[in-house]
Length: 228
Image (cartoon, rainbow, N blue to C red):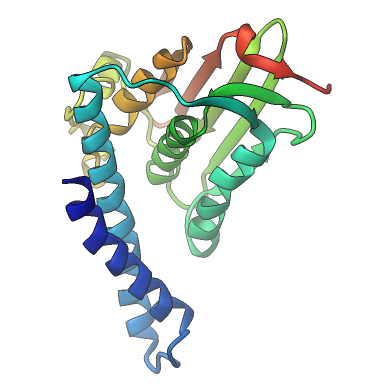
């Protein structure tokens, strides 16, 4: 099922990217460039949704075994942030990174799952923060505190009473400005489950009209080396 769902989506994304880059010739009308960009964004959202649904299904069937390895966290963070920098370049919030690639060190974790956690949190922050706002990605690691990453935004925020809903699969928050945004309700529950699979915790603080702060903590025994 995974192959059957992802293969056509990958084709849509691949060919739309070729058109977007004008690799097969110039796109005469600027309107068509906008259409291609929307196809690309819609395909990315759909692929993310499919991947999340498949991952939730897998977690419900059994507890996956972590494929642990020593990760250069600075490199992984840059790898995860880079696509979003391109996404917000034309229109969107400012995306600011506040970590030193040399100082966050090495962490023992599953690279694929940790990247999925980071991508989900950054994607949510960018999605729910309008043009003119800010998204900040912070990270640090020490032998005492473990590995910590924070994704903070100045977006639409979530009312305190609705925070539990944000962690329930397929729940939608439909009050206020949240109606203007697409929210399927899988990103946060999945990220929380994957963090807990690593023995860590995920905390969310939010206020409507002010923004949201998500903090991920992995235990100290996962920090292999820190250079700061």
